[in-house]
Amino acid sequence: MNRYRLRVPIDDAEVALARMLELFPAGVEEERDGADVVFAGYADAPPAPDLEPEPVAPGWEDAGRALHRPVRVGSLWIGPPWFDPEEIAVVIDPGRAFGTGAHGSTRAALELLGRLDPVPALDLGCGSGVLSVAAARLGFGPIQAFDLDPLAVGATAENAARNGVDVAVAQADVLTDPLPPAPLWLANLELDLLRRLLERADLPARVLASGLTSDQTLGGVDRAEIDGWAAEVLNS
Image (cartoon, rainbow, N blue to C red; front, side, top):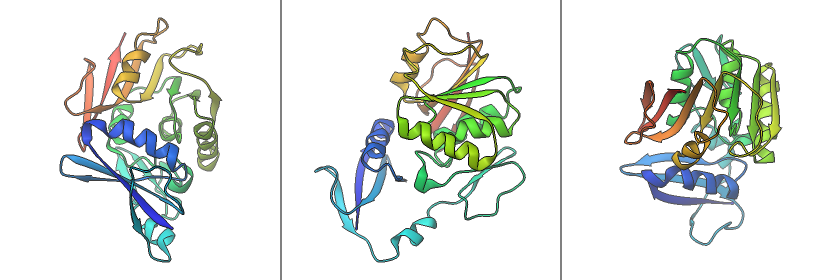
């Protein structure tokens, strides 16, 4: 078993993360190193020629657990299942997910979500379902989640069940496919995809958009920044 690393400038992090998750669907580690972000995944053989390999010692699976710690955003506790959850918890297994809630873009979105009044919502590009589960735990609903990747659809359904919340999950291209009406959209995507999403003719009254870097903006009416990542609320 080897650990394979990819270093990119922070401006390229979202695209690189999407690529690494395709190469390592069981999960990806992420760390900041100055102006760069380093992603890493584990495999027996190199999944791509441009990744930097390094051997890992026996027991790496258990050692990797130390990299995943709970985080708190407002009233929410977000963490892996081997920690004791707090009262309002979002439990995500990083070995089965595309995101665990610790990433700055997710935490920024969760911070803004906690400022909004609960309403029905769509989670567009749901990944592991962190935003869907968090919204349900905060009283939003009904929640409907969509992703083009069938693995993400499965991960969101699994994590909703793990947390005992109702989330209707389906496979869809959120940029082009018809979407059901809801007054709030949640979208943690890279900037290009967010801009294309905001070109849809059926925009709701409010969009919570995340995945921006600290120097990017969509002109929202409210904004949160965490660890160099930003989220904004936009009113249509």
